[in-house]
Length: 45
Image 1 (cartoon, helix red, strand yellow):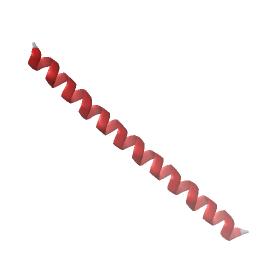
Image 2 (cartoon, one colour; image 1 turned 45 degrees about the vertical axis):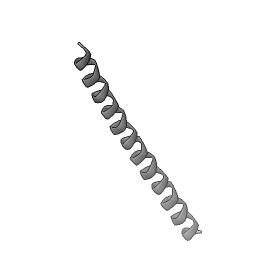
Image 3 (cartoon, one colour; image 1 turned 90 degrees about the horizontal axis):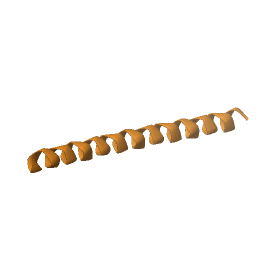
């Protein structure tokens, strides 16, 4: 019983870490796109 709970807790924590990491990378990619868009916009005017 204890080992099953430990395995479940480990799986949940790994899933949480993976979701946080994917969110951070998506936000970073989005901010890079926004920077590139702003640079393009400034260069046109």
